[in-house]
Each structure stands twice: as C-alpha cells, then as structure tokens.
Image 1 (spheres, rainbow, N blue to C red):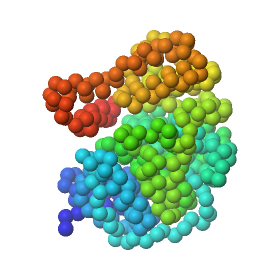
Image 2 (image 1 turned 90 degrees about the horizontal axis):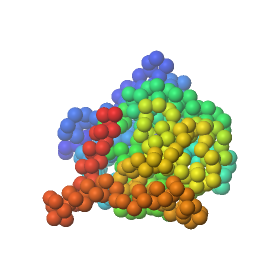
Image 3 (image 1 turned 180 degrees about the horizontal axis):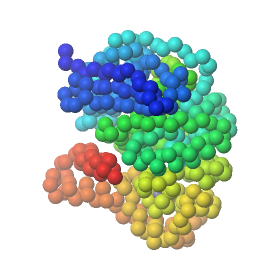
Image 4 (image 1 turned 180 degrees about the vertical axis):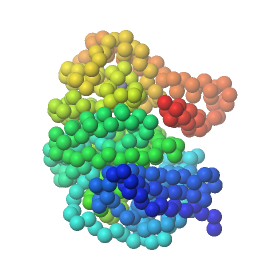
Length: 408
Ligand SMILES: [Zn+2]
C-alpha cells in the first residue's frame, strides 16, 4: 500500500548542541525535514521515543492524506489521542486536512519519569505565558498547580530564524524574567515554520513537538490558554484550543490547557503584579526586528490600552508614549483582531470610561468592517454571486499573508 514514512535520523552532538531531525517522505513531493536543536547539557532530559516528531509532523501528514509508518518507538496512548485529534481537524477544516492511519514499528509506552509531577511550559514572554508561569510558581492554580520548573523559549516560532540578535536579546530578558521566580529557560531552535505548514492551525502541535522532547524529566506540559472559554467561537477555531490540545497527550506526558477561565484583561491584571514583567513583557511580533515592543502595532497598542483600562500607568516595557493619532492609524489584521479591539471598547464603556478620547477613537475605528471582511464581501459579490466558499477565500488570504510573513 502507498504510504508515507517518518524516519528519525541519528542525533548529532556538535558545538555544544544536540541536533535532532525527523524526515517525512513518500508523501509525493519533496521529503519534509523537521529539526530541533537544544543545548547538549539537556541531553539526559530528551526522550528516545519518536513522539515529539509524530506530533510535529501531524499537520503535514494530514495535508498529505496518506497512511504513515513511523520508523521508531511511539506511545500507543499518543496514537490513540492523535486519532481523535485528526478527526476533529478534518471536521473543522475538511478542505485542508484528512485523518490518516498512523502506525509505528514499535508501539510501546516509554518508561516513566524518575520524579512525578514536574512540568515544563512554552514561554514567549507575553501575557499568556507570563500568566501561566506566575500562577503556577505562586501556587495560585489550586489543585491544578504544577511543579513548573522550566520554560522552553523557541527560536523559529515568533522570532524568525533570520533574527538571531533579536532572539539572543529576548532570551536574556526572558531568562531574567524566569529566574526572578526560580525557573530555568531552555533555548530551542527549530525549522518548524520553514516547512510552511499553516501556522494558525498547527502552532500548538509545533509547541508540543518542542515540549514533548523533554519527557524523560517532565510528565506535564502547560500551554497558556490563547483564548478564554467565554469567547470560544466554534466557527473560528484557533490552532491552540481546549478541545484539541489535550489530545496531544500520552499516558506519560500530559498536556493541560491552562487558564481558560481568564480573559486577556484579567490575565494582564495578574501579570501587572510582577515587577520584572512590567520591565520585560514582550507582546510585539509585528515589528520583530528588536526585542523592544514597538508601541505602534495592534498588539502593542491593545496591551497599552488594556493597562489604561486597568487604571495602570504605561510600564517601562512600552517605551514610547501613545497618542490619539497612533491609535487612529492602526490597521487591525482580520476579523479576530477587529473583534478584540471592539471588546476593549465594550469593557471601557462598562467601566464608565466612554468619555475618554482613546475610547472614542477606538469605537469609531471598530465601527468599520475589517479589510479582510471587506475584501471577502466584494470578491464574493463581484466574481461568484455569493456562492464562493468563504473558507477557501480565507485560506488564500492566509497563504498570501504567511508567504509575506516568511519574506520579512
Ligand atoms: Zn508592537
């Protein structure tokens, strides 16, 4: 039978780093290579199982749509969960993904960790990850509080591989931030995004592929929630979500979606109690040339305004003052950004701030349709008499944008 194969290449130790690579081939086009690199000193924490690479290749495998044979050991409990994971994504996005049959040469659970209950998280330095780090280190998550020791900061996700200085500078800041609450930073370099798999859908799998490497030491991964349960819209599924994320777990390595009951504003109110976070918080990925928040992009402006909403002064991590004109010149990308700004207006009105100039400016802006929606509407009217599927149009727009981003 025609099937693809996932092969683990021999690990290499070079210049103080451990290089790991897996190749997905037989899918028709060129073989896909997924490479992770970590400091050699962490070698003993890394699993011998193929699980992290099966997770990392799950979206490409669903795009290829052929059965996959993994040459190496895989946890049957992971395969059990991934089967449901793929079914979900195939229902959500049938034009992009198919659930495929995955088998491994050896299907067997890995030996357990020497110490139970140790957790690792993904860390970007933004609100979601600061919130999760702080909450668990301060024991604020009730029974769900984990013994969170390390955070993986990935070079090749938010910071492109070409921006080495930015990554190095952010790594220093994040290390300071994490050490202030007794956590270690694990630097990891990956080419995941260069495989050009749709990032919006696959980023939780990409993060887990990185975190699951360390399962010889840790049995739990925490993924900071990217959206609260209260605004979960089944028509706008996002790569990381409480429904499909936990299905990236196996019996020996559990994934928890953390903090879904908190809005971004509530998270910011908690993070604002952390003095180092007010110095080093990093939310800006638009202007990713430096480690400093640009104070002009949608995410920077949204965070500064959220702090105003909480009655807080602009902290040192946002060095530029924000004027009315800067808010006015903002161009939110897509429906989601547009809706987020509109919710900021509603929250401000609820708190009796409707008289503030910035609230009025924002309200005026969010009254207009976003450019993606306008483009979609007019394309539909002009060419397709309203029969062209919006999802296809959105995926074309997505493609254009991701190629543009890659070119940055
Ligand atoms: Zn910015």
